[in-house]
Structures are given as structure tokens and as C-alpha cells.
Image (cartoon, rainbow, N blue to C red; front, side, top):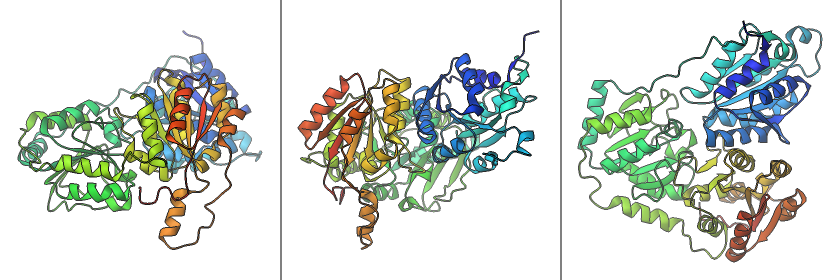
Length: 538
């Protein structure tokens, strides 16, 4: 019989089996045994400066490895510091294991310091919330991993009591749930859908995060190409079809300017295929943009539609790539979009987001895309720059641009880039932040130095909350609470041990980007733009 091991080791080994090789967080006395167990299992623990940033680093790592992200937080304030990023993982469909220290149950009956119901806090923003225990250690560990990854992925919270972490359990793991097989439509449903596809003259695909999480890029590209169907993606799904493809109409979600072209195009279609499309990323302008009683709409999703942002003529709950492959085999291509509408729409979108500005946010994005390698990974913070970036930055692979699309939280771009770079050292990784979002997580530059990352951090500097300031003016309100002092962001980069450049022209930006790619340490590039530079551009 094998010797017993600590309960914390059971959890750590199950996470290692799931492909996890790194965890992020900040320790307290309550999680020291866990950190020891993670390291012993082969999972490196990275000390960050704030748990919220740690969770975004964990997400960045997941985007590159496919293994669940791991956030480690101590009891009370440590766990609560991560709430924003955990809620983001829940809405953005990110598998994450959130492990928090907790005071032992019997101790909590007479000891109140830092004692609160963490399960109640995490329950509404996770797929499941557990309290680890000795008798069911193997079961809970496997449940956590399985639930986080299956269906629509998401975060799972585990409270790990101090005494349980060190308790001895049998190291033989009797439980490991087999993954579910991909589901495709029943024959009668497939026959109806394929009939609509074979007869359609103006079909369009709207692809989303479900298709991305199910690895649907190859299936979507093959399907769209075979039938000549144009593809619109949500921001999170950018790159499912390479955006330089003739059928790619780019991302959609938050840009009214892009919607002036994309929404009429969708409304002119005679068949709409929602391929893993989750409208949680979309602005209200995308609510009920078609009438499912007048146009055939096939909705392929991982979970039933309870959002009511749109309805469909045919709802398929199943695996998107498997369904597309089955539908492709059952239908016959025909002549579609005979009036050159696809090329016309692409041209109109390109004209709406021109790349020839001498300087400003569009020029910054264009110069970065031209100067940095094609395979560069990008992250975007929330704000006006993200809307413009999501329309202008071409992605040629899934997850080529990472952002908070559902919760739309600020402060995510820098840690997302750090997590991705940590596990994918050979890729160029650039983050784009507004100056306010940068200030929220500036302390993590110290972590970037300690992690020996040469990530590039681009900051749009206009000393304002540009998107909110724009909304105030649109509502004819005075600008209040949206402006702040100008800061030397390049100096901040140097102060934390990296490199820093302040740029005010394309040539200065190009030189800074070239230097950043050859630098040993991270680089902060502060791109100074005029206030109101986003007017009429998003």
C-alpha cells in the first residue's frame, strides 16, 4: 500500500495532471502548505503584487497552454482582492481554479478574525464553490478541474482549510471523470439545417467565444471557405478565421461606427449561422437585430439561450466545430453573395478605420501592427482605445488578441500580457492600456522585472478617461471626474527596472518598438495623444 500524502498534494497533483505548470497569487500563512504542494507537484508559484492582477495573469497563461489558470489567495482580504478578475473569468468563459485559504470550521466557531463566508461570496461568480475536506479530497479535486473545463468553461472556487491542507490521505486517486464527447445534431435537425444552407443565397456566420473555446478555428475556416460564407466574430473570437481572409469581416461588439456597416449586412442575409456566438460581449445595438420569424437562424451554442439578446429558428445545443463538420458534409455549396457585397463591406469597414493618420490612436495601432511581427500576441485594456484596437488590429489566429470582453474591466491588459509571455517566451507580446488602466496595475511592473519578461507595454496618454469623457460630451454634460494629471509613464518603467520611451510621432514609436523587441527587460512606451482623439473614430 502506498504511503499517504497531504490533502494539498492531492489537489496540486490533479492540477498538474490537467496541464497546469504555473500558479499566480500572494501567500498568507493559510496557503503556505498549498504553495509547497504546488511546487512539489511541478507547478511554479509566481508572487504578484495584487490578487486581481494574479488572476488575469492566470487567464493569460490559460490562453497559451489550454490548462486552467490558477489563482492562490489567502483568507479574507486576499480572496476578496481577486473578486473582479474571477467575475471576469465567469463572464468571459475562462477556466480558472481559485484556491483560497480559510480558517478551520471548528476554529471559526470561537475565532472571528478574518472569518467570512467565502463560499457565499464566490458562489454567484463561479461555476461551483467547494470547501476542501479530507474524506473527499480526490473527488473535489477532480470535480473542480472537470467543471472548470466542461461545457462553457469558467472559474471554480475551493476553500482550503489550514488543517485539511496538511491532513494525510490515500495518494491513490480513484476518481477521474472522463471528458464528454462532442455532440452533433440529430439527423432530422441536420437535414433541416443543411437544406437551409444549400438553398441560401446570402448566408452569414457570426462566431463567438464558444467556438474559440472548442477549438473551432479549422472547422470554421473550412466551412466558411467551402460555402463562401462571410464571417463576423465577437472581439473575444477574433482570429478564428484569419482576418486577412477574403471572407473575414473582422470583429464586432462595441463600435457604433463598425455597426453602421455590419448590422445592415447581417439584416440583408437570408441565413444567419450563429457559430458558438455568445452575445454577452455585445452592446445593446445587437439586441434583436434580426427577426427569427422572417429569416432562418441557426444557433449553435454550448448552453441553451437564456439571454434573449436574440432568438433563432433552430437551436442546436452541441459542439460548434463538430456541428459545422456534420453540416458541411450534409449540404451542397451554391452561388452566394453574387453582388460583390462582401468585398464592398470590407472596403467600407477599412475606410471607416483608416490607417493613414499622421498621429493619434489609430496611427499608434497601425504602426504597432506594421512594426511588430505578424505572430505578435496583443492584449487590450478597457476604454476607447480597446474599441478602436479591436476593429483595427488584425488577428491571424485564435487568442491573438486577449481582452475583457464581457465584464469589460480596466486593469486587465498588463497582467494578461505577462501571463501569456511567461508561458510563451518565444512570442512577442504587447499590451495596450489607457493611462488610467495602466495606473491601476502599475505595481505589477515590478513583477514583470522579477519574472524576467521583455513584454512591451504601450500606454495611450491623454490624461483622461477618454471613453467616459466622450460619453459625457455626447450627453451634453460637463466633464467631471474624468480628467487627471499627466504622468511620466516611461520613467515608471525605468524606475521598476525596465525600459521607458515617450513618443509623439510614428517615427519615435517605430524606434521604440524596435528597441523593445531587442531589449532584455520589459518596455513601457508612452504614446502621447491629444484629448478628444477618439472623436468620430469608434
